[in-house]
Length: 296
Image (cartoon, rainbow, N blue to C red; front, top):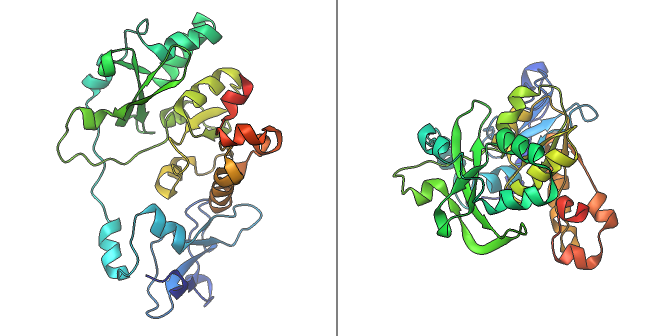
């Protein structure tokens, strides 16, 4: 599939302009079309004409990358790939059974070393942090709970008591449970919190641990975690429409992650912090420090 075969639809009156999927303004969105057939790409692929107020721009290249559409496939076939089954969810009983044994949870032990007990209890309850017996016990479960309070999955990670991850001690809850035909569609870690704070600004970082720490340190924002440098895409940002969002990418060699997230900021009309770009050393960039590492 050649990305160059797609172009923005020529203007043919207001009917050739659509409702923007980001700002929801009608007749302001220009979709991409196949220059050979005139067929439009998926309805979210295009550019908002409100450059100053929205700036949403989702290109064919980004769309193909986000949905894993391979080159040399016809678009008609790729449509079948995109029309996916609805996500699976984790049983609430499994979720509820993890909300205990915090005295055994190494991440909670670390949080208690830097915050008081009331703050840690607040963070546990806000993010619904779980505990698992996996990997010999003491492991943490970061539940991905969507805006409808449905549990998409949980990420299992084992930490040392100093807050550092133990290499190779991580997995998904649905994988550990061997759930058959499980369809994973991730959401942001902390997404469920959006229900309770309709006007507060949102900060997005990579790491779940970082989001939790920053919620205590900078409570004026709702802190979400993408779960990785590639964890921001069209489906995940839908609950953020109309929100004031700031991205906080990790430091990285050659500013690779900053540049990647800068493209996402432009695509979805978000702001981006360049704090780590300005104030981290080359050594810190090589080590991939995040904003929480820099604070502590």
